[in-house]
Length: 219
Image 1 (cartoon, one colour):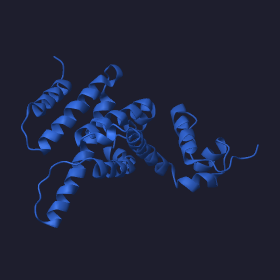
Image 2 (cartoon, helix red, strand yellow):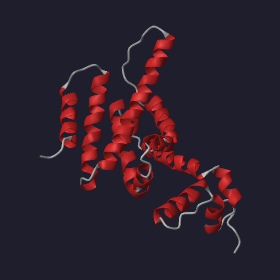
Image 3 (cartoon, helix red, strand yellow):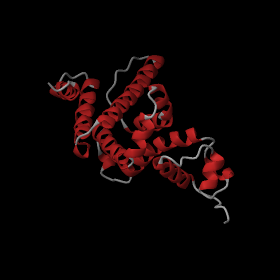
């Protein structure tokens, strides 16, 4: 049988995810993976240089697809920053939930958290690019270019840590239709904006109470 030519990156990712989820038949080499799926090994290398690169790309695609869907919505373009970020989170976690078996397998297979973070490195870049382009809050002008740059970098890192924290909550969420994750998103995003505005409003305490209730052991 003739080998497939000009196979797309999307198709390679689809084949790889299917194979991973099948479990016992996972190819140990790119050569074996290509042969098992009837395409030339060189076609794989046209898009990725390793399985690890492909896996990083999968998580980045969840982010880029989220942004693509949001930008197709005319209403989204009129939202304020808080509403935009809420829309991002809800859409992003819908995509994760649609691929939960794969995501859970990949993020939980490494007990070493640093390895999981490496897997999310391209997602981090995609997400922070989105934050820089779409999410704007009132900030302090330090009247110093270097100080302002450090402040902006801190904002991006804080946003990334918030996403990581939410992913971990979602991975542990056993509620029906991940309802608790939706509540977590709503309360945490609202609280994060209130904190950025240095406003000690009820939402901050409301989110803290929610976390306490979820993480404290049941007596």
